[in-house]
Length: 138
Image (cartoon, rainbow, N blue to C red):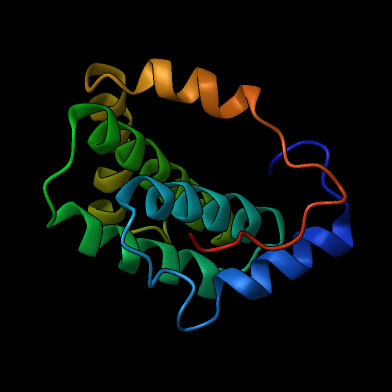
């Protein structure tokens, strides 16, 4: 989860990102950023419904024309979502299906080779502040 955000603001942001219209924006980069936020928050709150939503939105994003950096960043986020799903399953590999494991590793490989490294460094340099509310659409 992002640093410098209070628990109550994180909950508020999670609820905002779960609203039906939270991803109804035209800016692809902002959608990708929101997917990453939702995955981080869903992982922190152990919420499978948030991971499902983020993966569904990312499936739609993958159908669009993306830059290699955007595709790499989205792959990184998806790998994180699959990692969180594995954690929710209790890391019991007997419960974890092989196709699900196969979704996590390639996402990280593509992210590593897809130019996402620069974007990831920038993303982690930008922090949400406790006074920030849910993202505003522009």
